[in-house]
Image (cartoon, rainbow, N blue to C red; front, side, top):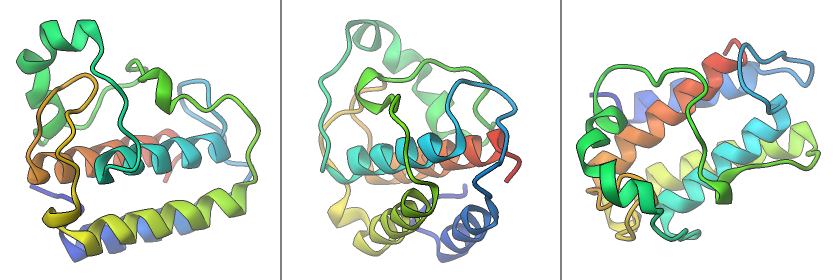
Length: 149
């Protein structure tokens, strides 16, 4: 399964991020492209342990049952709910966010399993480093497809 611990996956994600343009139009959702880049950086902060949002109630109830959605081969569907701590509402500068996301993707990869958080995902709960890496790849792929990347 493709994940961010694989060099080829990181190279592919970075290439796709590089191809994005400031005027890219979303195919679904509410964020503009710069907000999406910031949102993806925040998600990587969560996977790396730099951001530790609390578990949400509904996640405690059904998260374990739907955890395979986060780690299987099937791409995420459109318009899934977003944890409040990862919502980006303010305007962002595209090129700054683009560079920041590429840096965080590389840092996550370079840190490997040892630098992956042990804090539970706010919805899915406890994840192994491999599950975090797989889910982060799927999350990035989802949002790059959202903007045609």
